[in-house]
Length: 193
Figure 1 (tube, one colour):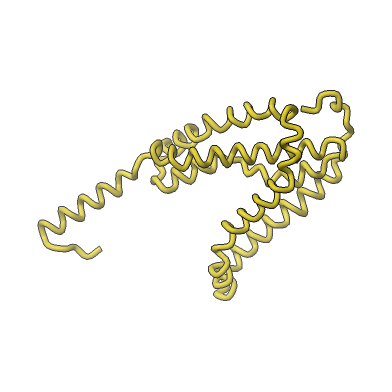
Figure 2 (cartoon, rainbow, N blue to C red):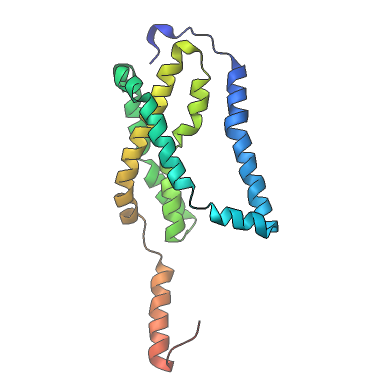
């Protein structure tokens, strides 16, 4: 993607700073908050009250970030084009690998579906701070590449919403449980469980 700019000097300092401040620090705060929620009813109550926040917050982040970078993506689409098949190439086998892993570990269907979605997305926006820590000559292109990956992932997620439930089997124990409850209730009357 860089073409003639492949000799750009990249300093490690901004990467380390962006990684520590924008990735490691929030992760540590989440771990600490989770640990405190188990020990404190106040913190647990606060977590429960804020549990709805990640979905609208992520939507706001997506709208803001994509909106701020979409002109760069459109401007540099010819330079980004070589990366698009790589993004799509990851998107195709990832849910199958997730399904195989789920089957190998005999995961229940809801957990298996979560594994499939998790294996299929790379949370590309997490690396956006690292892209923005690059030298100014390539910062815009790197950010546009991250946004392009995010847009491809969103399209893939829309396909996965229909495909993954069809690929991931219903939990057999659920069907067995329902069948045994019906059999129990017909033989001996309703069974309290």
